[in-house]
Amino acid sequence: LIDKSVRFDTTFTINEAALEHFHGLSTKEVYRVFDESCQAGRKGIFSWFSSLLKICERSLKKSYDQYQKERIVHDYQAITYKSCKKDLKTYRRKKRWLSSRRKRQFLEACMQRKNLKSREEATNEIPVWQLTRLMKNIHKRLPSKVHFYQLFGYKNVFIHGHFSGEKVDGFAFDHYFREGIFRGTGTVANSMKLLKIRSPESTNSL
Image 1 (spheres, helix red, strand yellow):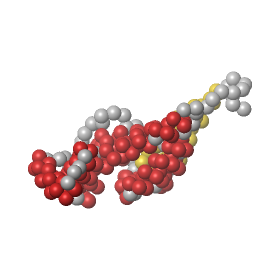
Image 2 (spheres, one colour):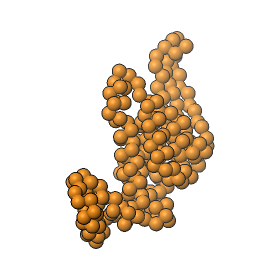
Image 3 (tube, one colour):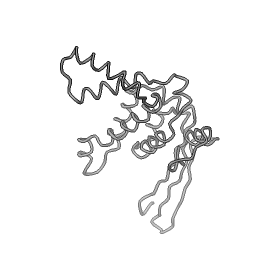
Image 4 (spheres, helix red, strand yellow):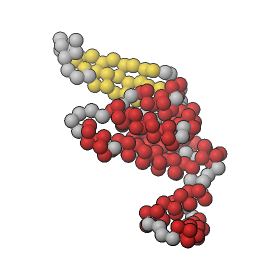
């Protein structure tokens, strides 16, 4: 029997096929996994407050949106902004009145549309910084490996770690576990190697 709480230390590693699977999901599908995982992970007396404000969902979706934007859209150029300003003037004539918020949304959507990367560019140019932040947020907030499988594909996720604690007789125990055999450097580390850049922060679990 176990006398005290057990401590788990788990590391998730994904390969390049995992990103292909992830990129193949629609925004609606990714959001659905986020919603389900956040709902399943809520515990404690303040869970109702977190549910009310959607703190978990908003954080994950924001990280995902930032990653996707940098992955599929080129940096904005002044010429694109001027072009979209002209489009906005034409659009305003049709609508007669637009709120400041609606104007910003129109300009943002217009600039993204005119700066979209090609499929090849979006596949080969991975924004490592944003990917690192997204993965860390996912690792922090997803309560079950099932949600990792849904996002990255069952065959593309590799898990290892250990759990430790103390028995009623006072003896400590430490057990190691592994699911899948991964051979490689991990998606983020491999992308950094190909791009010859250094990590902005730890990427050990990616």
